[in-house]
Length: 510
Image 1 (tube, rainbow, N blue to C red):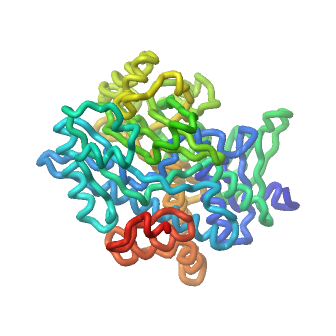
Image 2 (image 1 turned 60 degrees about the horizontal axis):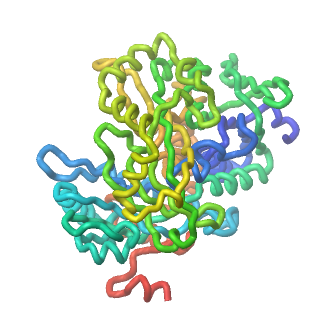
């Protein structure tokens, strides 16, 4: 801790995950004089949802996740959500490229690797859906280079494990885009936190539990912090607070007492992976293969067979299998859900329970699944899987948003949402997928929501455009800029880009 900034902060970041790390680094780049401190209840950063084993690491670009492309009543495919998520990931790529370019991150391969993204389906109805989806997506420049096949031999070239010993009477189809990535968000968080705290006026405090927030007369917040090792308590004062504590954000938002958070609740969903570390198996699969979600399942439960690169080791993950736990964090308490109940959120909770019976039924079924049931699901994506090659890996907790609604009492949301104080002095991030991959987008939203006065030509705007060259321009609308940005970030991050017409990927790599 540095001198007078020990107690008087410009920015307090609660939670040491990818969200707080991204926002902290971005703010420090825009305003180097800021005094920023991060508070984390655990002994290190990225131990919850940001940890590589706790998320899919997909770098959600909405290439393969079919839940982002629903079928309309008239049979057409709505790709609007996919496009939104797709270009949000471009913001993260630009932010990371900037940090690599200035030397803050020495080697992009320490956290990101090229891995094709694929969608795979079987059955006539699903094949028809994927065919329409491919046609709708490739009509837009954001999905240039996406490939489609219903030929089992071609799909077997892409993902041999998926097609081995598959019966020929069941139609199959797949899409593939080579620009996909696998991202180790745990490693990335460590890199960002290390860079942040190496700068003057910045510090991170582990084993530090935030117990309360008190609004003072001068508009600042007093933050009460307890050292979980010694039990000692201390106070710090901050002009601005970002609550980016994953599943722990809701209880902290409630502690703040801001009226904007009134009525919000959370619905926790747990997850389990099947994990395979056998190098002989792993070298025969290089893709993230996403299927269709079961009816009533949450987005985080879309089945996928994933290539992962974590700590230099290649592994396969399959799942996740959803379940229910009353914990809000993997390292949390079984009392988390019950302790979050307030008079103001009882109606939203009951309304969501009433209106989401399919989800409740699905989660009960997942909780009751046997090992045999899990392996049967894996068999759909890897028919020759041997149970002895796989072991269980517990994933992170996700707390879905339950928000108050005048008409229905409460709504269950599967995205993320920023809940901020009216005076812009505090903001909390609630929700889950597609969180980590869109951290830069979320951080920019925090800037626009809480620091709009600084986003001017005479203040932060020129620097922000240096960090995020596409800022202020829609890559959905500007095809030329989209292609330019993707080519430039692919070069810096050492990931694949769409080859020029007539140039094969093999030739490009050679």
